Length: 237
Image (tube, rainbow, N blue to C red):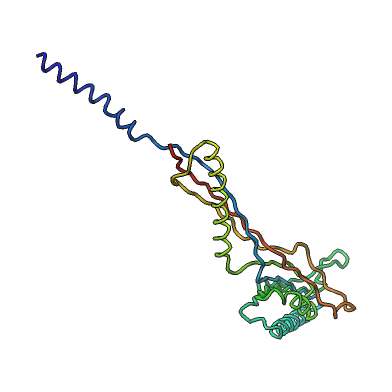
C-alpha cells in the first residue's frame, strides 16, 4: 500500500508541475510593436473631362438639331487633336420641354436638349487644348476635370518600402534604448491608400470670343499616396 501511495503521489506531482516546466521552457520572447508610414508623390499622366452641350429653341426639332450639330463638331475637334473615338463617350442625354404661362394656362414655350460627354485625355499636356477646342465647337459647360495616374503599382511599392523603413528605424531606436536588439519579425500588417483623382474644382466658364486665341492654362500638379504598416519585432532576451 505504501508503494502504491508513493507512486500515486509522484504521478500527481508530475501531472501538476510538468506543464509549468514546459511553459517556462516555451516562454515567449519580448515583442516590440511599431507603426511606420511612407508617402510618395506622382505626376498625373491622364485626365478625364466631362463637358456639356445645352441648346434651347422654340421647337423640338431645332433644339435637337442644334445640339446634334454641336456634339458632332466637338467630336471632330477632338479627332483633330488625336483623341481616339474609344476615349469619347456620351454619359447622359436629356430632352425636355420648357413651360411658361399664358394667362391661367401652362403652355410649352420651348425645348431644351442637353448632352453630357466624357473625354479621356491620355496626354495631360493636351488638356488645355482640349478645353479650348470643345468650348470653341459648342460646349457651354465643363462639369468636371479629373487628373489621375494610369499605373500606380511602382509608386505603391515605394510607399510601402518607405513605411517599412520608417517602422524599422523607430524599432532600432527603441531597442537600443532598452539595451536589446531586433532578432526577427513576428507579424506584419499594412494599409495602403488609393490614388484619388485630383479634381479641378468649380465649373469652368466658357471664354469670351476676344480671348479665344489664348490657350487655357491647365496645371496637372502632383498626387500623393500614403502607406502605413504595423510590425511586431522580436527582441533579444
